[in-house]
Image (cartoon, rainbow, N blue to C red; front, top):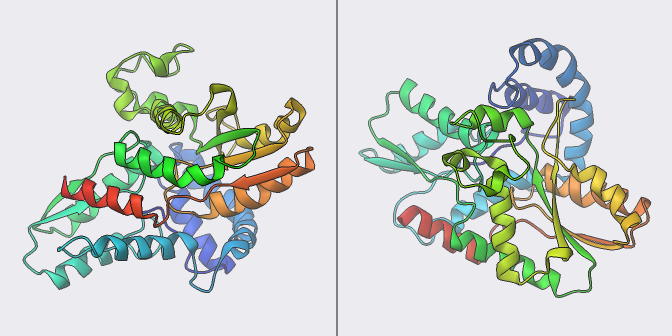
Amino acid sequence: MNLGSPDSTEVPDVRKYLNEFLTDRRVIDSWLVRNLLVRTVIVPKRAPESAKAYHTIWSKNGSPLVHTTMELAQKLQEHLPDPVSVAMRYGNPDLESAFEALLKKVPEIQEVIAVPLYPHYAMSSYETAVEHAKEIHRKKKYKFKLEFIPPFYQNPGYIHAMAENMRPYIQKDYDHLLFSFHGIPERHLIISDPTHSHCLQTADCCSVATVAHATCYRHQCFQTMKLVADELGLEKKKFSFSFQSRLLKDPWLKPYTDYRLQEMPGEGIKKLLVVCPAFVSDCLETLEEIEIRGKESFLASGGSEYEMIPCLNIHQLWVKTLVNLVKG
């Protein structure tokens, strides 16, 4: 299961996709914003802009995210005896068609293992994928058991795959490595905190052991960064983190990637590498926001060299990790 994309770069298709995405209550938790502003103001304004952005990354195969996920499924199928199917949380192929494709191959199927392709837990990514799958499973009254692979942010295979995917890039001459994670509103951390008293309550909350870390996106991002940096032997002064892709004017996790890209050249960082560990497949947020617009911003602010490290996509170590996750 991956995020999804519009069916095309045409404005009506992008508008349809954005409506489905932005009216998800786990993405935008405000009823007022979701039901009034999204449909009447946000989507009508953003759809033409997003259509242009999608057009810059669209390939002959269509959406990079959908195509790469399909390729990943094919690679996974080569190592598994049971059928593999692909579903998107928003757009196509949808979850019901993915379930039906499995049933067509194995009518008496007993169990389906769903793999949300999100390394970290967030209500707007992992949680909504899981709850949506449960809802479809319940509504269609499928008889098979439905299981989920949990967030794999510190899984040794995922960390190793991330490190090896990055290694050729850090062997080049660079000043700094930026781990740019997808952003979420700060209040989402508080909503997801089962203790209702830990997340964002102190400056070092992510370093203090607590059951809240099981659903704390920020803590899990930090863990991924630390483990990857440790495996690569990175000096602490050579890397940092930020959060990208914020929406609306609410406080989101900081620091913001777009701000940092403008600030870094003034701090003496002229040669920058950027990696996006929250995404396993390259998509609009990596290919357009980071690789295209991010580069333009950094160079315009005085930087001299900029390179985005691709996502794991179909890296052989990532495929191996998925196989091991599914096999348990």
